[in-house]
Length: 357
Image 1 (cartoon, one colour):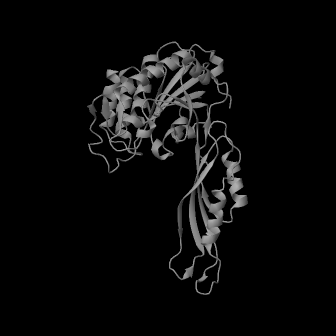
Image 2: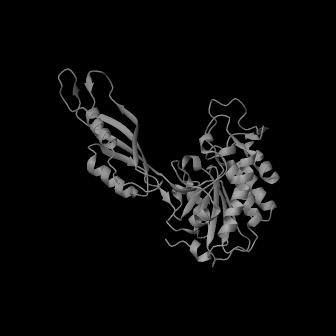
Image 3: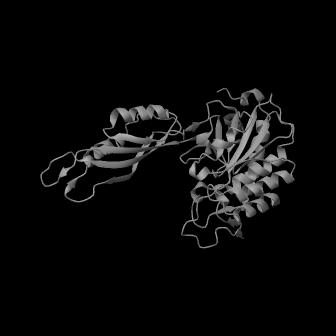
């Protein structure tokens, strides 16, 4: 606990907005090296593996992120000055996801040299808050084959066995300009409104048994230049929170079939995640009495192709808030909970962890 608290305070005191995580990566690399685990750097990512790595065994990835969002205007204290008051550790990134990162690092260094029936790989990734190309997506290509992953995020140590994905769709409704007084032309706003009404009518009928329905929300819209000109262009952006009930390609085809507007750009890379029924991590959770949940928020799980869970100390409701904090008891429970989970996993038949793409 003392090692964990010291490391977390050092990380809080080191600003690390997305794409500027280098100094924090140095701190974590030094922490690993001092404990006998040679660190590897890929950009601002840091990773290492069990010293007795055995390619014949399945491999479990322990991952959390180094970066933070920018501090909001509502902070009433220095966001980079770690302060403990009444069992609360205040500081930017303390809850999201510093406590998870530190707890995973400490447990990895405790168990990494033990003879477990699986290999452990630890990765502290960059650019999670912006889902950037220089984060977990970059470091994955440098890791050995991974069979399953634990992603550290604040879930109150509940196990998120499913997570929504995200599609961002940029659309352009195209009309014909004209003078408003004559009623001539085709108003692009009317075309956009019809498409928006269709999107909000819940057109994605299949429901996930864990995540529910796909949700589409129009979040940005722009059209027109002056009051007496019928606009011939209306641009709008759709935020689509996806589930395992549809592939992103299926949703894209539905949009192309039903929207009158032209799809200008679409993002497909942040995919939903769901642990397969009967997976060994589910069995372990039930044996330990760990609550299993579905997560509505996005994380690096969206970029991991192998089975994964999201789990960590802290409260997701505190993420990205002013005067962010984590309880010292939560940090302690995170260390104990990760340790208990990995030791229980070691009691399971090792072949059940292996990933078959």
